[in-house]
Image (cartoon, rainbow, N blue to C red; front, side, top):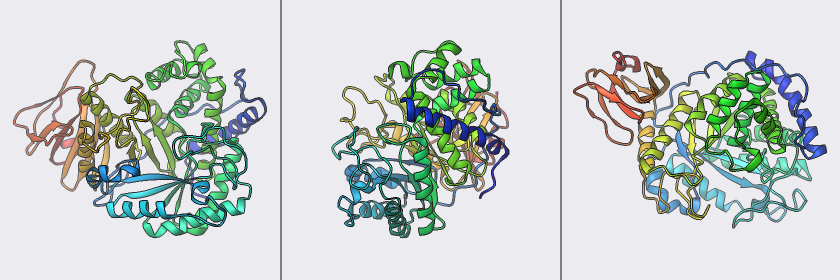
Length: 495
């Protein structure tokens, strides 16, 4: 088993106890929203910074996206600009093998081939869904493809054979990372208990590694909302009440009221405890604990994060991950987006949020950021673009797409380091003798001035930087600074 850091070892037993106890609550009582005390749990340590990342290999970078393959032709010009990134595609046993013994791989073969041609690494999420292979009647059919929630296979050996076939078939396409299920904390994605999910992932991991010893097993990707409740639950259990209330309001500022009692207005520790005791949020914390049990036990080798919140919530998430994730387990954000029901931000301000969220996650030690959706789907929710796309439905680039592309250009083959000094926040990319910084002022209503160094070019994110003859004034809008030298040398004179 891989070595685990001290924080991971200290918290593993407590998380397993939480997972087991909450699993019983879910199974027996349907998660009634009463007392949520499940016994003593060690208070979590304050998060230290996540480990720094090694340089990205030449011609690769961490800024990818997820898209609708039915609009591949419209998106193709932009996808070529993201060459060197990563994406994922979700499959299910029930959809590929609709008739026992007669799998149809044609659609996934085409996706794998096109991904390889684009130079975009493909990750695969493997779900069961519900059909002959699982039994049961779906309660949550979704979309034109009639996707369903997943549940446990009737025959685990048959499930392992299917997983092994997936891995053996797509290893030649360069697929190395396989996530087991999707957002299992949500009932519309997973019918079973946390314990059943642990059993499923353990069986899947055996099949994955038997088919390809170099493959990496990834967790389901707990939802963005569930991570938020994990963040505040950790702080409450540690007795950090004021921090918990502040973290809740920063993280959920665009969610409050969108799900009624599940994400209510919170202004006291008592109202926060009431929110945590809601049965859906109890389930969220239980499945997060089960996921972390799999990580601590070495069954899962890569943590998958989903994040759709305001950038103000990123620091609390990073603090949580630093405290709870073993130091030798990498983290990737396979779903990053902008949840904003009835959002009224203009294209520029929304694009700048794309930059801030993406770079803050990367600067915090997360090695891949995949934006979702790549292109806005006007049919996904009437009257409002709840999740903001980088492109228009026809593939036309938005300002967000141009800014995101500028991040990819800066990060290609670079070493990543955080920027947090003298009122500047952001990230630095160093490649050879040149560095590119993406920074903004973290001072409230105050700008930061950077004196020019030789070869300094500056400009807003998304635009080609121009030669800086005088000091550069940086407001709360992201700016690109590019020059020969290290990030520290570029910021040698900051006011």
